[in-house]
Image (cartoon, rainbow, N blue to C red):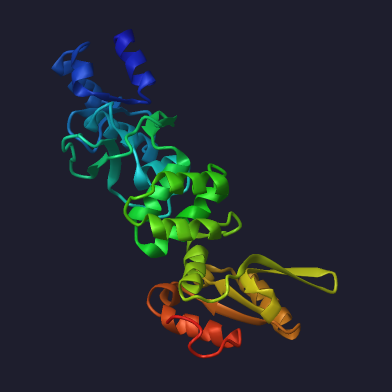
Length: 302
């Protein structure tokens, strides 16, 4: 292979355009390399991939970046995936350009114009993308409300953002769509949340105007400490999100039930909720929790 082409492929993280290959090789040589598995086609016409590299989200994003052009940057859930805190799993890749950018969207790629521009772009895993705090704030503003706190919690958990950086990024987005909702969530973001669904459950409590629960509540009794996903210590109430109970081993299930019994024996009310409760039966979930907290009727929003 032509060494200049080899360096280009390496510099671009294993992705390259058909036009770049044609500058060094004939059509027949390119087809032979694809048939042999040395190269392979990407999801997008005109972009090839080094066949020795395993498929990965970052590789797909680098390929998509060649399709939309070098002046655009990854944003929204695509940038969150590069930063390591994506909770949406959106198969559509998102890129950002200046307010005047013309439409370059392709199947599976959405291009957005931005009044804030992209001069603050950061290089992550071979792709230019929006900075981590701005990315988290963009996702919160442009996604369903139930995903907002989960995104902010994940951003802090990834150690790519700090609370102060999120607050500053939210302030920088003054006047943009849903920025008020974003700003209301930032003070509640917490790196101790262990999963997106735990964060979504907590958001339901906050959205209903229940008292804000603490996270990873430790209950010390007799030299032991049992931890709860979220809890209201002053009320002796804890709430757990059960996402993988059906996949627990017999030993894990036994330990979980022992913990539940131990906490109940020591005066705690332990509530268990599932994805169905969080997404479809959240009014009942909130009502059950409010009653456990001893809140008067009408003091929370259903």
